[in-house]
Length: 259
Image (tube, rainbow, N blue to C red):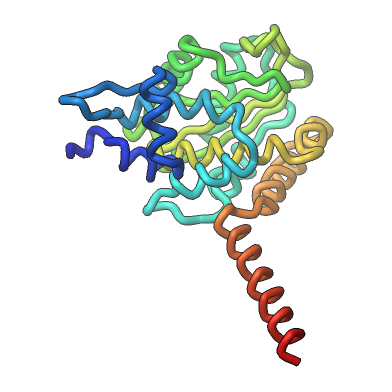
């Protein structure tokens, strides 16, 4: 099997989902794929783009599983957002009043990391992605990013954050205005999905968005984001904790009945 394509078994492992579920989605046209000699094949980049949209509706548990299945061998830090965000790549307030000026400002802020080698190319890639479909949510948050990895435009994966003083039209659902912006630029698709999944979990955390809007400066916003990332418990950690408690309870029952 070419490394350029997944078969059903490979994709089910990549997504952490049952093979029969993947096949059913493919047969119904709910997941991008094509048949070759009767066997389903899936292109990794098409799956990445599909997941970007699907994960908007994922629960915390589903996002946690996606984090684990997309964890890159080159990046094993349990706190991806805190790892790629720097104090200098946070700007509160972000002085921008239009979608274009927001993207230009975010690329400029990201450049403070000294990891942006070709800012004009990076900006064009982000704008091209926004032209396909806005990355804005209905809660006033947007996560602009390039459609494909930008290995020539950046040195290392990075995240930049900015909060405008008021909401601006950014293409959100139902014309919702946007004021919180996470720019995500990664060198590979797995890390990209890992970061998006972690951000999705953070955005679902109670009070996180409201608290982020209340931050008064870049330093407090940076600290809040990093703290929220570090408070997220990975799915494997949850399973380990549950398994540990099951063993404790089992041992306690055995001790009681054998006494």
